Image (cartoon, rainbow, N blue to C red; front, side):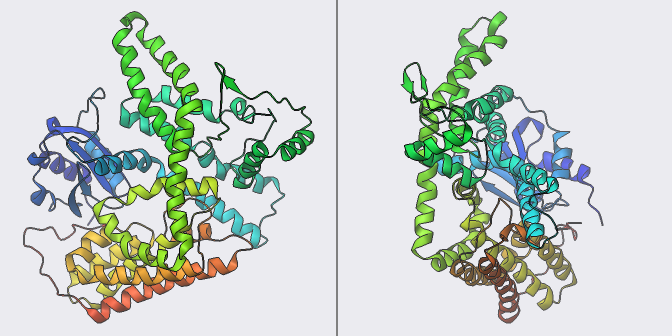
Length: 502
């Protein structure tokens, strides 16, 4: 039976303390994320029994209502029932620094992850079609689709600026203009100290060549001659201070820092400027101050932070890819349950920008397929018709990368399938690491995005990846079936279609 999310939304809002208790509400791939004035007013036990609600969590200072694939439908209905004051800060109160960071990261990245992943899937598909001979890489069709698929990464700073502005209570259009300035062709043409005209490209190989040109005068000279532009040795400066070469294409942390500091700049000028000129001059000062400051300070600092975070993971990975795969495979699902899995997003995005691929996603796919296999094992083993229905629905959803229904609706309820899924994920992740499996563009691992893991000339990595997810899936199902689990009788007050994902 289909769920009426209009009725469910009314119950959700009532049980979280009503409209007056809501500071802010957002959603990610599967969860409604409420920031409440008083979280103790929420009746979590009753909320779990609302139609369409899988479970309720309190994490990162938020009340997270897990819905599943239909979270967008529930979110639209909830928005009709709550009135949020845009002038009120939306940070969760009284939480630790780790929880606050996870809240910030999830709020910034969650709104555009699917569109960004769609760009990655498009890249994977046209690469696969070219390798199969179905599409000529020299054709206009391929070239147009190729630059379209890169657009999400080229203008990633703009999307980050918009969502960060919402999070930090900054005028979103002011933040977007500042981000656009950092990826504009005019700035890209001034990037190098030698003032060589370089192509604005999100291709990692081109970015690497651009960086090498800055450090190697001979390469700079060759590129200048190819471009037909004379070399000018004068470096780019602002008020006499040299601007460090940095490409902000696909940049994340520098943009977040910029918008965060911009929130203080905006509040300062809103406080001191007369009302008659405030709306005009506040954005002007924000842009005129923050773009140069980012070029001079926040950009290099953010780049250093991002490079350090990514460098730690990549160093550990290269010490032993198999061990790294086993650790990721075993711990990824527990991290999802704790809501701290968002912490890896800047690392993966940074890897695509700097390396042109990401190893973590190649390892992360195994626990996803292992969890799908574990709930399939529940479906095969269970004697309870309701549990069979729930596990089949959750397993199919997990195959497409959405694992929360499988985790909360099945695995954690029965406990042993969760352990079996983690074990199978560790084995699959170890295999993926042994084959150095990678994804070549951003994605949310699942059966629909397999082309993203393929690239011509890297067939052993792709076959190793396929082996890893197949082993994880089959092993998850077999272990769950062999180990078994204790059947639970549903509570008489719980709705039968609680985890329905139709």
